[in-house]
Amino acid sequence: MGQQPSKGLGNEVSEKTVKAFELLNLYKELEESLALGELRPVAEAYRQILSWCRARRDRDLQSVLELLGTEERCPAWRRQALEDAFRLFYDEAAALGVEGLAQLKEPPTSEEIGFRQLPEALVDAQAWKRKSYSGFFEESGNLVYRRRWEYEILRVDGGQICGRKIVTAAQSSYICSTALAVKAIQTLVPVDECCAVREDARAMRGPFLLPKGPRGAMRWEPADEGQESVSDFAAPKVCEPLHFEDGCVAPARARLAFPKPRGI
Image (cartoon, rainbow, N blue to C red; front, side, top):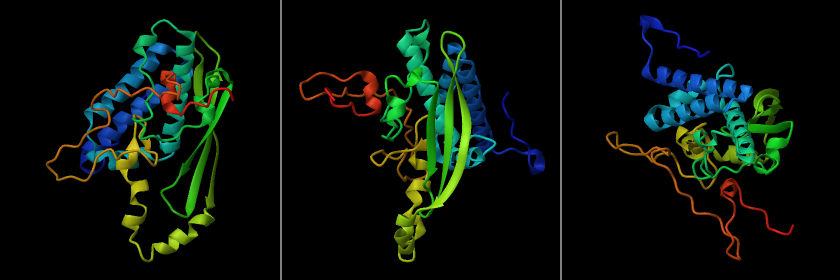
């Protein structure tokens, strides 16, 4: 099922390569389990991904992401699709109140993904009932030249919980005309200062290692070599419930997006 790192010159495989293939195999196990729609394998695969994130410190993350980034492995667009598929699977399991739900960990909270905004179509209470969900991932590392991946997540009829299958729809690229002026600024501002944050592994948050939102904190701040980094999975987070003006508390799942005004 899983891929193994090929040995290079000298029959040696770097520790970073081993880490990358460990995570790659865990992502593939989760994707295959989601397609089958079986709760226990999905729960176990996701639990192992969380454990990997807690056990691995962040200093090697850039190399891990580079090794994952090729299309035949698990690039960012596919990791986002995998997170979306898991959210839909969890929402269906929770809505149906299936037996064994307690063993399935909740999807990452808004804070854990760096306050990245999720699409309304994904957080809608009825999203899990639809036959398919369409999403996209846009690469923003380059200020002018952008690449965009579109994908579909199909709801596969099966057992007590429907499976979720990721399907590639299209890949495109375009020039962002509004960023041309910013490109000119690079003649005055070093590239490292201009766009490093969007390309920095420190900006990747959550168990699926996706770019944080504008309000999200970095995974770690620059520190001395001997200083220990703090993982965003180091301890469970307790999120304060959202409140309406009249004091009513919004549902727990509303942590993923601001609740819509009532009466509309």
